[in-house]
Length: 198
Image (cartoon, rainbow, N blue to C red; front, side, top):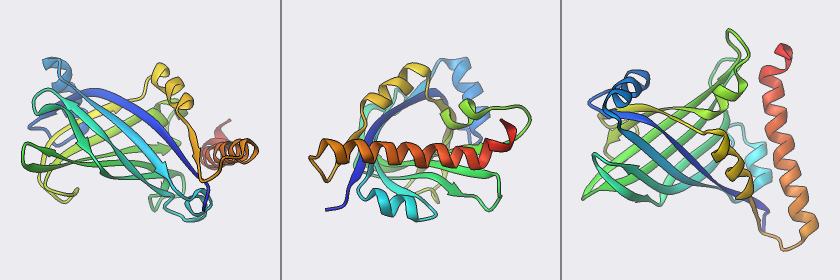
């Protein structure tokens, strides 16, 4: 059985219906005091395969809290990519996508963190800011019906670290090695992007 990794991540931020641009949606959400929260579980069933493949794809499940549409809207199907290529040498994407139902209608939340070097050193902001759109339908090709910006704050980041679990082995040594390997991969990708700026 391959060794894998799972962890939980919660991101929340101002969000608004009737918007298609995440930043404009966040501004409208701020004005109206409306927040969307994504409670997600990332699953990487085969860590070696995940690291070796360029898209670094796992799966996502969880729930969405968004008062205009509902609370605790569950999702069993989703996509997670960590540092997937963008076509630009110094830009990678962290992708979070969840399919869920609003009553009987399918909706799809699609978000990207833009991890890149631009003006100023913004590693923390890049890796914790998710530009997000809400679509009608079963995938991101559907009509955009809302948008906003979700963020992972310091407290949620620390909680994320405490939720990391290793699957596929009961060996404490193998579990520790898997966590170290994942951490090394994560930091190595960050170094490839930001190293020259340090």
